Length: 152
Image 1 (cartoon, rainbow, N blue to C red):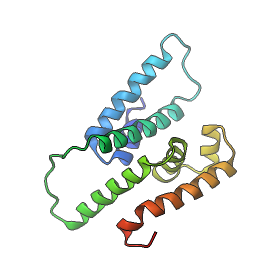
Image 2: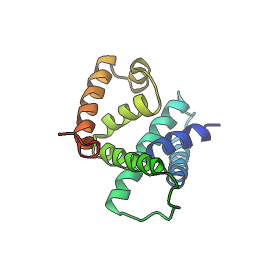
Image 3: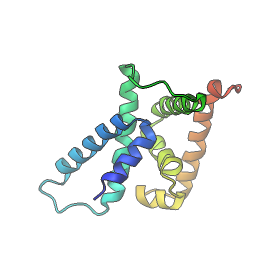
Image 4: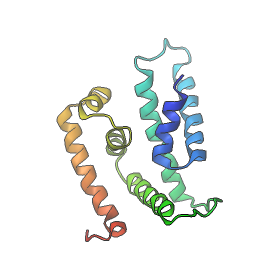
């Protein structure tokens, strides 16, 4: 029922269908382990979205620790390569964030949720969401300055 939600969330963060499939499998295995013997959970969609974000960030972090070379066709257009490179740079920058900051950033700017919805989902205030987003954007801006050709 929630396969598409988890896959889309993971794909937006990892930028790779194979990694998104791995995240999908990890999330649903965690869900099975978590719900076995219980009556289920209050909000499956919220749990799965958050789990997908966290598992995706774990994949990015592990990819940095164990770099691999992907076997992909070289894109025909330069723009495809630039988008892929930007996605990789952003992924590396996000992997350096604190888990809660990365989660809030992903929910806001990758999943497109509003601050109010994020606050309700995470059980925190809207002010904390806004402050976290501001600080996270500042940190990411510093991390991306070199790529974007700006001074840090």
